[in-house]
Image 1: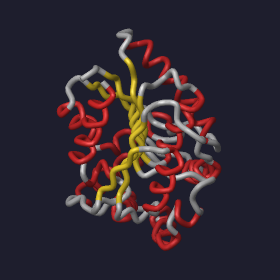
Image 2: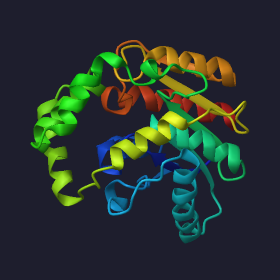
Image 3: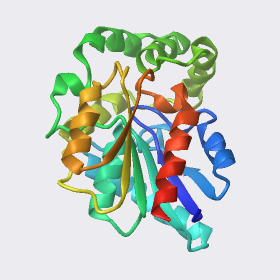
Image 4: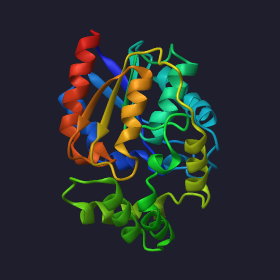
Length: 255
């Protein structure tokens, strides 16, 4: 198996710590694959700066930081891109604009404004709960509700919510970050094709973004797709081992 450096990109108002132990599990299962995580502008280590309002602007900002990271490694190894949700929109735009940067791309539960209806990209029935969560001043209660909206199989939601609730105090986001990221996601348009091999993974029980969005996007781009029958939107939390097995098979085919 060819060594790779992997760049992981998270989704809407999520930072790299929200991967939980998934990067470590990924590297343990695939020891020749090194994992690096960068936060989108507006969250995590970048929480003090405003989030851009378009996906290309987000991609340009994070690419500058990735180029510095890549130069610091100095090993000449190829890079792959692993993404979820809003991160997948950034990933598609990135390989379209700079196909030389990555040799492959993994997309999880993506959507696109030119292919999917707005009320399927963000399912209308969860909007009251999502709004209530965003207005809740208790960070633990807020995280608990978001996890209930985005996971279907995770068995320790309360434990995770208590841990993730501390992130707000440590790295508070600007008030408009979520809205600006939603605007960027809403404006995103999928490319006609992708210039690198790509794998699409989706969740049949995704209550956040309708599963049809991934099906339509896979057909549009001609991608191989695997559908988890029971997982929710945050597939890396719900079934990390399933993802790792699919990625392992994918990269073995590329060698």
